[in-house]
Length: 125
Image (cartoon, rainbow, N blue to C red; front, side, top):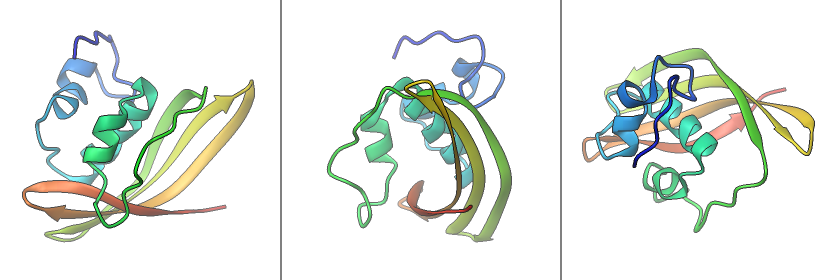
């Protein structure tokens, strides 16, 4: 992927040293890094990456992107529950059709076959 960005969409210093390597095949070292890379994948509309990092038991058949404009990510909490389970609480802000939205989710991740995978998330009010 030839994307050149000065700052990473997830808020990291630059794409090449932040989420870029994960989008190019390097396994994320922990669930928080995977969650950040998945946010960046939504920003960059990398559907194949999102599907590849979604647990097969809960993965949808396809990813549909709307004309959303992602505005920012805030990781509120990262909890490593065991060697192979973690949760990440985050708030992502975006706009669709000029209207601002806020996605506040507590996401569940598992570590299988030497890779972290997104399982599901619960939306909070």
